[in-house]
Length: 142
Image 1 (cartoon, rainbow, N blue to C red):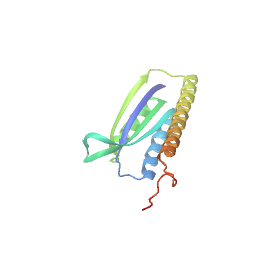
Image 2: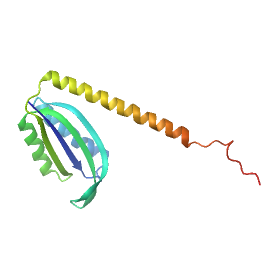
Image 3: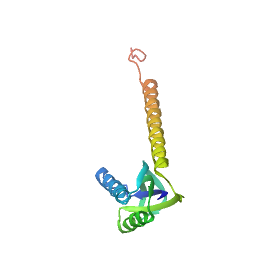
Image 4: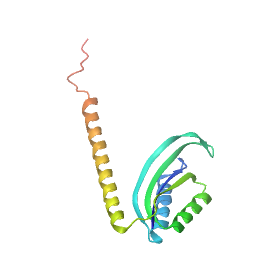
């Protein structure tokens, strides 16, 4: 098996169900051939540098995985057929990856995601404390 990363852009007008369906189908292709998903990140909807298929925005998905070359070809074949996928790019990260490396990289990705979530929650909590106004501070007595 080899290690790859694929970033694909979906039409932003799709609903959450369709985003999830495309992601699950992609994961299924990799797992059915004995591959493993190392990291999956949904980067959300972002403005494109230029219009693609008359869309100014796109919903980005980042996908890091270990798979056979045939799995990658099948996934890309489906991306070419599916009109909901605006663009995709697959990059081979390494020629060989073993089970121990897959397990350690998956654990690292989970730890990074947990730290990122905790940091975002902490930033939200600080923002909420600073942004609140007290009734005692503002009085209008005329």
